[in-house]
Image (tube, rainbow, N blue to C red; front, side, top):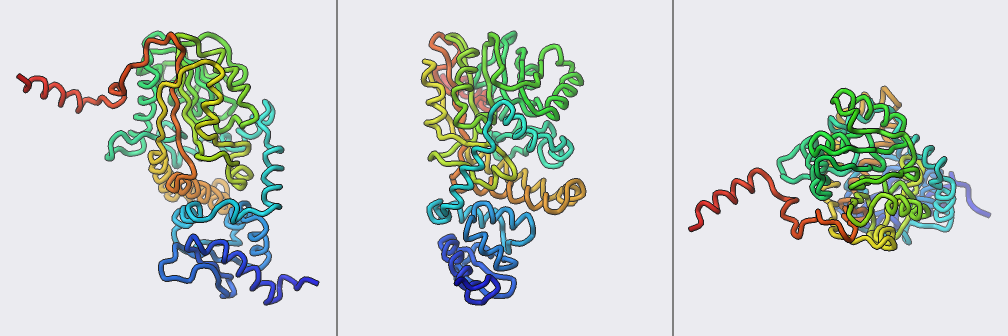
Length: 417
């Protein structure tokens, strides 16, 4: 017969069990009653403080989901730097160490429940992106770009780095005035508007978030670009027509592995022998489901693919992959800025959604930052083109040209005999 959870013997067993789990990451574990386990050295990363034995038991059963739920509920708190604790956990604790048969079953059930069918995708996207633009305005940049920024220069702030990222994408695609571009998953519309205003192209941008599409249409009208950029509230699977370029920025991770065939059909319809496309997406080094808590509470239906899985999506189409880049550390820096801005706005977020929501999103942003720092998450850009596309340069020189480098080149040429 099992001892009740309230008994000292059961508490000690649970404490020691979970303590052994987190010890390799130099994490201390303590019950609010004062009993301790886990790492005991002076160089500990942080301490997890658990309210009661019931929470501790749930951590032992399914740490991947329970850690996040208990933190958001206030049944668990962290003494020390939350992002540093999570980074150490990602670096030092394998899935085999923290996984249990129950946790794996719960993860598979969640994936089935959040399947990205046309109806399921709309529900999944609504839960995250339709929280109101006012919430995202508190901590994103001024144009609401919710993807990895590109810090072409260390002195850049978030606003500058997001503009640099959008321009980097345009230069990779070698956009030409008068061309037509289709974008799948356009967010609040910043990239489509940048393409139109700075490169003179026409853009059709698809999105199933009503909140984002409404915002993007208002901004296009304010900028006088509503005749050049069309924001379509529709699923990416319904994209059709002839275009000169295809762009998907931060959307592939929302497609789901089981729906890559549908994404492939869209690329096949839009990228022809003379055209080109770009995929920008959060990825993994190894094929694994995204953290179950993130899928349950933040990003339902999300799956970051490996680079191999993304390339296999393109390969049957006989398209040439012409450039692959990993911007992982750029995303880590982006998240540092997002998290800092979020913390500055935490009181306002609490007024809008409550204290539990603040803790939930703090954990999501800190966990994402930790994932990119530790290398469990990557940020890939894959440029591909049809066999007759003549616009892809033979070097990468065009990607890194700035006014400063051009001035240096001119001085060097004039100084050369």
